[in-house]
Length: 92
Image (cartoon, rainbow, N blue to C red; front, side, top):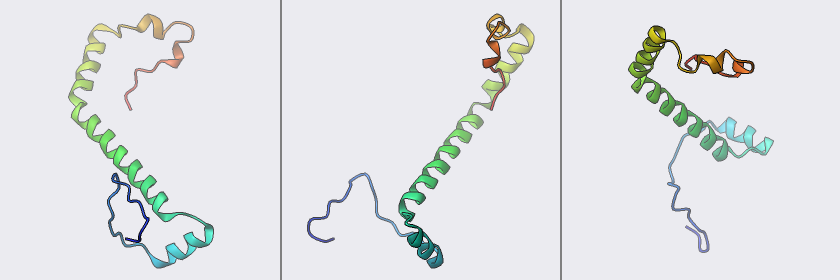
């Protein structure tokens, strides 16, 4: 490390292979490959966390749906009221 450089304690250096042509093209476009990679990794990690949460809670969603089927939705008066179209009972 060169004198005067500050290392962010939240980051960890790693080595990831990147196609040389991609680097050349990105450089020519003024694109920061590291920043783009971080953004893609963050989005991918968040999607995995979302899917894991949905999977872990699938039985609860199913039970809730069954309950609504037997008893109706407790907020049905609000949902069916004017402006109620902004409400959704659909699961992602």
